[in-house]
Image (cartoon, rainbow, N blue to C red; front, side, top):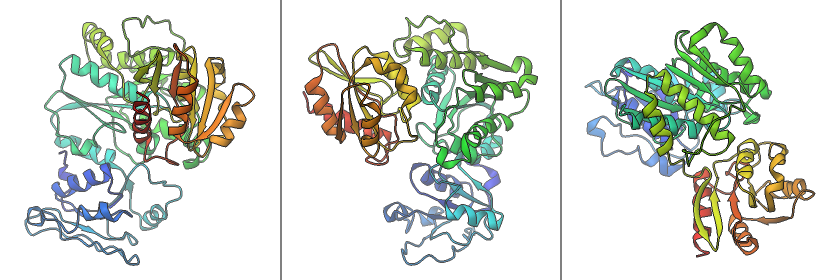
Length: 458
């Protein structure tokens, strides 16, 4: 577990006790902080109160679900260990920070306004990691952001480093919460996938290598227009020391503008132009033009960290890809079934449609925009579309003039209908171009449901 001396004796309010929130509470208490935590889910609250570990630093806690009252200030044990209480958070006076999960909408959540009125910083677990860096063995941090491709690029960089024998951990918006993992030995590299939400909650993360892949419209309900979303991405570089390395894809105007603003970094700035001719034949899990950009970014990161060309080549060739990202999960009767549940916006879905000749496209969920324009260049690859979820009726209307469409509503029904229509050589592709939260917990649960539905076809 990663802890910081700087937390000792401080008092934190933690909102949300899912994976990252629970890891945050454990790390803060282990670091000697007092914590008051809250989650609307009683089962998540019960994990921390009452606690059988009280004698080892946990507080007794409160689990009342009665009307909210002012949160008590957490105390510290006589031995100086941190304690945790579980109580609603209404009054944040006296706290050193409010720690929230990236899913909390800072622009609308009432507790964010309470924190601002009380002058209490609102931070996330990545900021706590940044505060702990001075207590860790000598290391480097790679931060990777972008609307699309950041998970693949993060996993690829992590894989290349492992292939080269460099101690490395992967965290942030992928894998285990970073605070829950054991600190790396000297010379290790932390590779962090960073969403715009996580960057918003971070103030002091000085990445040794910072990467921006691209910026396209996404999450606009959380920002003051597209400019606000782009500005959030740019903050990753504003937190960097000028002598650290920046790697930026310049295939879109906002990213190119951020790169121009960093032109003074000279040799510490690498620009990745679109359309670079790159042989990908030796990289089975990195096909398509979108993966060419991901690979170029990963290569630039590895070179900045001093990885040899031989190890980079070995890593690219042996990379197996990510679950739920253009992952073939089955083949029945000559029909391939591909899980691309991680494609949560049209820009991310477009490369998947273009990658297969004849596609039965399962699309829909909770839409992030009003159109599918980014996918339009690949519409010729779609044999038939099957729309699901909240966006299903709207998408059926959008697509109806370009291809046969079935508004089936549910993922199970879409799989059954697609299987009935598909011919040998076709691909049944779940690439929803939407968030999953209308019908599923997250994109992983959606991908698991797709696999289960496909397995029933056997």
